[in-house]
Image (cartoon, rainbow, N blue to C red):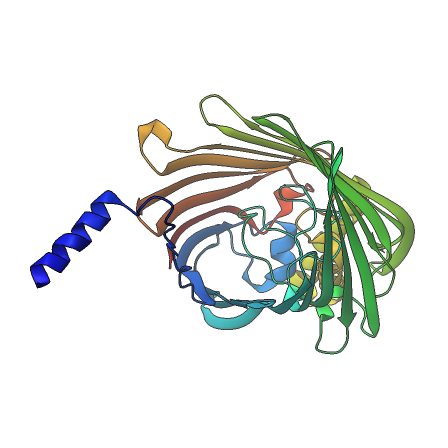
Length: 431
């Protein structure tokens, strides 16, 4: 009897259902965990050759101005990305733990780069609350229209940036016609004691907004930020593929009443109010050999003119001489305040060009990438060059070698940087 039943079942499976008879086959949905966890662990030993005659070395290390100064540095980072998503609610966190060894000292920091909750009450509306990075702008390393984000690192523009505590929303609509997508992102960023203090003056609730349009196959953003902790400003950016392998982008920002601290002859910083316009124009090209070329020009409307930078370098020289002769640190202290106020930033002057070339699978070796980047200060012809080699010997493991060479004459931007050469090796394991 049992064998007969098995045989009958086998016939049904082979022959299929009888004519006119429907078979209800339901595939259960995949079981997906609402939790996600990832990140990486990296180690970055480095060797640095300092320039004891440079302005920034004299300001930051006046007691150790020894010719040929060289130092070993080490940094280790653990980045954890965690998320939760269920229905209309989601939450994301990005935590970074850094351990550094420099100047014979160890220090460690634990920072929440992002930690926010998102609710989606409607398919077209999302509201976020917490610490997050907004990633406005189209430039590769310079983003004058990224009003609420921190500055990228020229050595690693893709490196995660610490965000700010905000309340934001995204309202998205789609259309038929030349305008395909439109979205509006209003943002509130409070600054108080212990809250977003990096952003500027405390006691302000800063408001900003971005309007995004996908119009005629062109990405367009229009940004606005009201006055408060920082002066108010407006801006826009756009990006378009001219061909499948050529992308062009631009970014523009205007601050009607910018505040720039400028050194006077007596070494006093005076805040000057002026209109400032900054812009980025660039392109990204993929060649037939799979080589990627990126070029960006940056006009820094908040930058210093050559004579203003010359006054800063002169103050450093006089201050260091006074310190060596008499131990008087007053002029050096003034130079230090000027450095922190803007003269020591990554791109303190007005006109820069950035270029980058990368070649994946170089020499036919799978997962071997050769690359080189350069930043040239067009005002004084000083520059920095960053050659690199990157390889993935095994899955999830990435090894990178990077050299940073800074060159320029006396009294130039990159010529007066603290280090002449920096070599680092980075081993990063993703999980």
